[in-house]
Image (cartoon, rainbow, N blue to C red; front, side):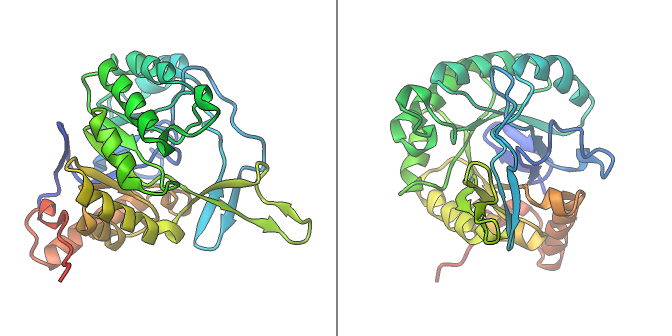
Length: 304
């Protein structure tokens, strides 16, 4: 069998498949459906300093080849996460990445300081798609200086691997990627959701209470692949590809485009044990193509 292990900075994953933040709960909700330890890792839902109830309903809507969501980072807050949720992952034999967010640079740093001390936390993923309240609500991830500042603050708050999750809703994602690396990111995950909207033509109302939302699923895979390919040429840190990965073949595309690992997200709503099917598909591809190590595929796209 092919060696599926990969390295994300100082972090070693048994295989390149992780469950993405926001679609996998706190890491235990999918245990009835499959052995979560089979995955290379899991990323928890976003954790903030204080609890959040999230956005008003409706906040999820199905669209052709995807879904819209505007959950609003609903979570129990860092204190309850540490006391109630994280202990349930103590015996989980795979990498645990905690996704974090805040309204200010200081909030990001404080959340990281609190969670990074727990031995079950293997890495931090920084969600920079959140609005910066000190800068009029502009998302951290759409401004190079803000991205670098929040990454640097997180970097100073932990010695554990720092992964910055990039938004595609920018003019040039490579500039944001460079800013994150300059701030000290060990790796980048991309992409977060694409801004989208849907309307009920009978009621003439948006399907999402806040009108626009984040589009995910197969509909955004070509966008995500292009962003990974572009960023691979701009920075040297490992990349984690996200966006519409439903099969092993989808994952292989991301690896060839330059990703070291992938995250599955919308797939979990369609097929709860889907991540295992993606992993099996990667293994079959390697075996049928004589690939001894999945690392041989990273950035292996033929450009001529």
